Image 1 (tube, rainbow, N blue to C red):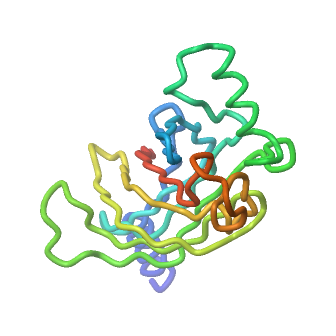
Image 2 (cartoon, rainbow, N blue to C red):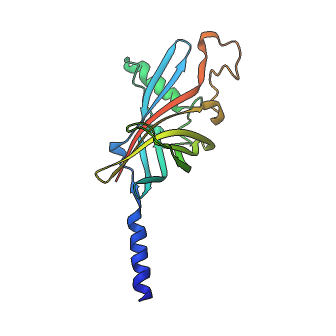
Image 3 (cartoon, helix red, strand yellow):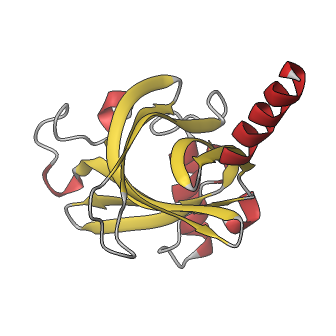
Length: 194
């Protein structure tokens, strides 16, 4: 009898908490970097990850991003675009030959009380790892379930210099004038997991 009760309890727990695998084809990450004379935008593919929900409530997530697939979307000239992306992949920026992936792993997730429908409903804190360097990051996230699919969307910013990306940073290199590139980089993501 005890074994039957234990089995039922384990089955019930499994139903309440479900880890879903992120679908890279249905997920996207966009980036924006600014400079004095304008900005650049692009995408970077999601490689893998998981989202865990308990009774429909977001409880954990891990996202792995493929830095080797970074793109730029605002430079129309094919040659200039390829040169710019190669620079992003190189040692001045993300050094993808040595650091092919970046990751975000949640550490704490707090529901936002009385969140309006369609607005961020969780405060997420976790570890963002870029170039093998891990720093904490906190942002608001919108999470929902869509016919059994877990969805999460949010925007966050990070200081690139904390990850040893100091190319044309006015914080570290004075007198750059209009060649300064802002330290803050914005990421917007929309991930889908089943």
